[in-house]
Length: 254
Ligand code: CDP
Image 1 (cartoon, rainbow, N blue to C red):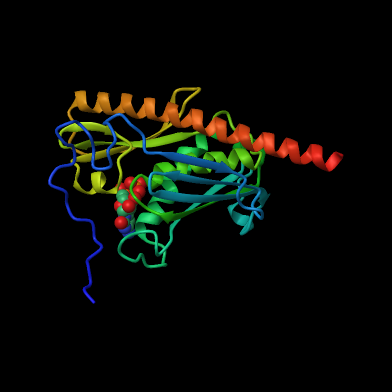
Image 2: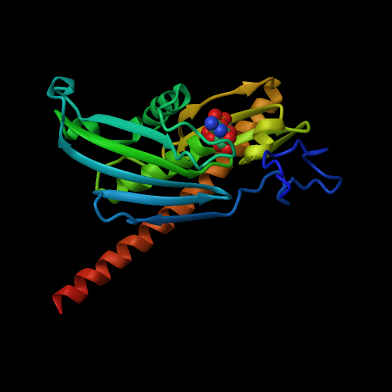
């Protein structure tokens, strides 16, 4: 049996003569997305999100009693985020032990969500957000933020806005929306952005690679437009869930 290496090879170019990307998208096009809310029975709130081949589950528990107690904050809830990648989620098996990258992303995701949550309403408690990456194809931190804010809303946790996130990148000299793994690996830079769209408040902005001020401006504008499209999908997913719950309650009352 011939063993074929599964590691993605560097493509000759990332944008073709028609201006289309390796997966056929235009530069300003999001990957195909699927969002579902209330997908896990045990959790207080949950969400499932697909963004192209990136797939993520989020479970939210809380506000609940905090253990260990000494971590409790007297004036607000403690938001805890745990970002984990399944061993089978990437091409090269990921060790199940928490990596530095997972610990860092857990913190980055928490900081992107915190401004939206009314933590001061639940002093001394914990709100736990568990993020499991089932399949990774680039943009997992942003997909996690988008899905986590849906799961928090599903848990009924009061928020001033949802948080929507997407990464833009610099690929073959073009600024492109929602980069996938190949574009992330072989492009010249990426910029993940999270936005509270109603307030127009940016809660995450990271930058990798060399960008001119004009490229940065263009990238940020593209990311904000992308977040606004994602926000519209988030609201649709939440509305669908509430209509389902309403149906269930009406049926039970019959
Ligand atoms: O996923 P995100 O772009 O937010 O974070 P990253 O650290 O820039 O990782 C980019 C991509 O690299 C991930 O989405 C995965 O597809 C891939 N990756 C991998 O193949 N193996 C890992 N251990 C970590 C990341």
